[in-house]
Length: 536
Image (cartoon, rainbow, N blue to C red; front, side):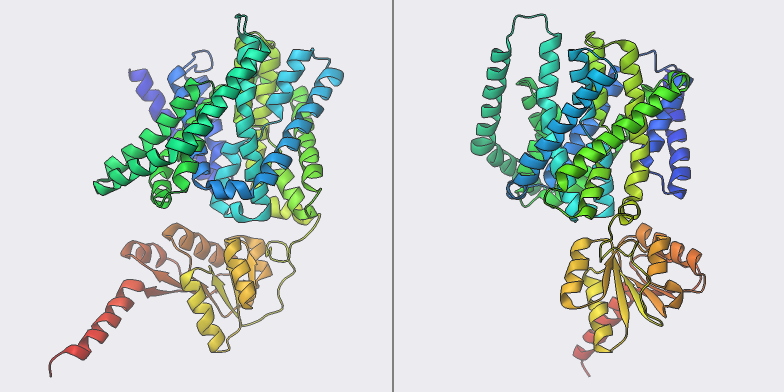
């Protein structure tokens, strides 16, 4: 018991320490969790002790990730994405698998079954790495983001027949391929009928009754019941837990409760995902990595280049170069499901233990490098083609003594409108592409990007501006932008709205920041209006 508590303490402490350090250098927290798992596995010998509970909790991290993806995609949105899902996703999966199979068979002389399993595992990309980045950066609404999401959904659905194939190959029963295909078809028809005739009504009624109780824990319990129940249902009839969670998310996306559900479930999903990446780290044999470094690096480079090239050529059929490159770069890593496929194949002696270990380390390296690629995806793609709205890569604007508006939400639009009426020169920067496109349709000069990045500040000439008005929401985002701007140009004049005393106390430590206290301004206006009705 004491050893377990010590391991939990060491894990939390090390993960926190690494992620504080990584965050400072803009490195994904995913890398921190994987490294934590690797270090802890050696300190407490987790790499020789199989912890089923850890794997189970980690798997449910993927389940809740798929659920949140489903929340973003109602059935109407899925219909609109049918080209990406059915054409781009299928081509990417089939051609990647075919090319990896050819490489495995002829370059590495693997037998048919081994080459097939490796090809299927390497054709998958990591939903768990890509989706959090797309959601946090708002790139999920960009052209490349939509294509990436479509391909990832197809891949997650493709995991189902892959796992069924492995189950069939590892089974000692006399089940034929025809019987297996018939079972899969019947299960698919059952799920489709359940969703169409029963699922949406059950979900809607459950959430409605839970919401009427006006108890947060009851509503949260209803969400968990829907997600876990649907996951168990799909798993019992031969599919994955993740598919059930995805279906649950899609059903809820068509209800009026989807916004509340998404906000309530977010922290739980992130916690479970961190455990998944920690469990990935515990499976990495660093001694094997260093003893076979040359082979691992070669496989790592070959795998990423192959996936990038295949995806680029497929997407380029009917898209511009920039979108194609970003889509290919985003999907270049290998999925955490690859761990599941190879681990399952190895445990049933379908592939050799040494080969499985080599491939697991290769997948690990692609997952480590992927966050760096994603964080610099605009910069990398700009070497091939630039987009007009990306302030990370455009030439510096021809302005001086202008105002920079950070954010174009409700407040940002009101500020821009007032400045235009006063004929004051300004430029808008937003990390929401929809807002940028809206601002440009109105006729404003607006760019897509993050003001806390140095290339953006250089492009918008922060040092030449008269002031920066920050209209974004959230204490962390306001602080991040303010700190980055002042580090870039310490004489910058920043104007920011604060909503709480905590925000004021946090930001007032920085110099050259002017505050507009929303509560004070609103209360003053309310008192002013009420004074008209005082008896005289």
